[in-house]
Every structure is written in structure tokens, then in C-alpha cells.
Image (tube, rainbow, N blue to C red; front, side, top):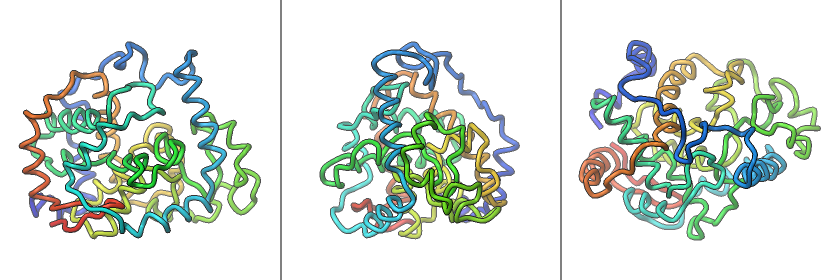
Length: 305
């Protein structure tokens, strides 16, 4: 990554996001890869019933104590080593069962996201890389990374340790979560304080927070906006629903502008044509070499420069 980009202040990223045309050259499709409306959770059918059941299990089990336990376990990063591209290729064996909009392997999703961004933001190589690695944490589903259940890896994310906002999908199922009835955790602020900053808020455990920890703990030089995107790209109650703004600090508000740009490509690129992997592979290998030399599991980034 260019030093100028890596060292750019957070407020500068926000300013650029404001000045850029938010819709860029990307045409938002009307339907997803199944010919349906994007994120239509009110429709009926076997697929929708499966996803609703996923959220029922997710909402019951994602507690404050569970998240703390998983963070303590996976912050060790002490198992296996592989390159970034090798890790991407592992996602050829992973399909996100919580996703209503695509049933393609996650490797394809990574490239669709990154390539869509690259077309509209050719000079923001940090954002291309963010698109490529944002879902790498889904390797948690694989045996060599712990083989976690889907409810602990994918799906929309939300804070734990405070009240579950009504905007969260299938909110009714939180009634089976012990935190829902715990006065320490079921108020507006819970264990947090006003404008404490999202870095200080525990999020439901999954691939987002995992990959964020990987980058943060290895002192990545990716800009703060990239880390914010990685950790919060599934946080739909925030970037789409407008909830939890009372927990955000000034830097969060600036980074949110980049997240909302990213989200359009991450979601709507699922309806685009398949990517020719061999054609784009040289670019991403060179970008990885430029920014990140290697990755270890529990993904351990050996060197970021």
C-alpha cells in the first residue's frame, strides 16, 4: 500500500467519501442472483425459512459472555500458516447459508466485491484489498479453523452488552437470549457509555470481528477506515438501519462514510457476472505482496507494511 494512503488521517478518508459520487459508475441491479429483491427477509419459501431458523439460533446464543470467550480463544492466532491467496482459495469450499442473495462460493464473492470497487475507485488500492479480505474470517467454518457453527460465523452483526435494537433482523428471537432479561445488558447503553466508540463495543461473534482482530493485533498499516469496514460490514442495524449512533465517536462517523460506500459493492455485486480468476489473480497477488506478506491462522498476519 502506498505510504501516503496508509498514513492518511481518518478525517481525510471521510472527507474524500463525502466528495466522491456515492454511486460512482456502479449500476445497482434490481434483483439478486436468484432474480429476487435484495435482502427480502419477508418473502416465503424454503430458503427464507432456513435463514429465519439460522437467526433464531444466532439470537439465542450470541451473549456477552459467549463473545468474550470466543475473543479470548481466537486472539491467540497460534495454529497454521498460509498465504492470503491460499486462504482465499479455501473459501471455494464455503457458501454462506445466511445469505439470501447468493449461493456462490465465498471466493467468488470476494472477487466480485473487490473488482466492483476497483472499477469505480482505481486509485484506492487499500479499498480493493479490503474487498478481497473482508470475508476471509469465514474460514472459521472449516475444521482447521475450529469448525464453528454457522450461527457463530456469518449473518448480520450487532452489539452485545446493551439492548438489542428493534432494527435487528428477527428481533423476536432475542427473548430466548439470557442477556435480553439481564438488567446489566438490556438497557440503551448497557455496559457502555455515550460516544464510547465502536472499537470499545463487543459485537456478536463472527467472521467480521475475527478478521478485525487479526489485522489489529498484528498492527496492520491498513487505514482505520479499512478496519472499520472489516469489522462492521455485516452491521446492518448501523450502516443501513441507523441504530446505535449513540455509541459512535467522531472517528466512527467519518469511517461510516467509507463503510456505506463499501456496502453497496459488497451487497449488489452479488448479482454481477462471474470473475475470471486467472485474469485478475496477478493484480491481487501483486497487491498482497505490496501490502501483506503472509497470513497465519488463526489468521495471523505476519507482516503488514
